Image 1 (cartoon, rainbow, N blue to C red):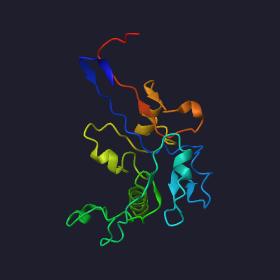
Image 2 (image 1 turned 45 degrees about the vertical axis):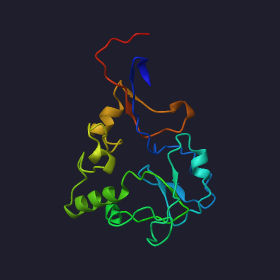
Image 3 (image 1 turned 135 degrees about the horizontal axis):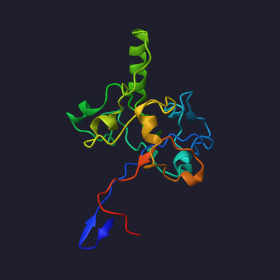
Length: 190
């Protein structure tokens, strides 16, 4: 919280997987379920995960989540959704089993779909063509996704902004997520 006690301001900072260039979660996985893709994403092989939770213990952002629910077995006691709520599950995403670690994938299924469409049309993926679920549902349109290696892309330009910063950058994990400092109309006091 910020602001005066009589008029506090609540701030919200969405914390998702930072897709670190040097990801501390990867080397501690005893079965190599956490790995780095060629595109620079920190990925997870769910059916290889044995649920040790070492990856979350070693993640300075604490963004990995242990799946305590058995969504694959609707009759089990640990199933979280009564009818008709199972219809809310995304049909493009595999339902993970009980006992595995889960994380943000940057909607890899959407990345693959956009790449396939571009390949079929014999063209490169256009800037802004891939839209993650969090970006799509953000009411303020504050989330931008794209190719950081394409210096002309919107996301690359924003990441180089003077307002840009990386959470816990001092740890040397090289996070791929860039946050932009708040723009205020009041002069900085301090």
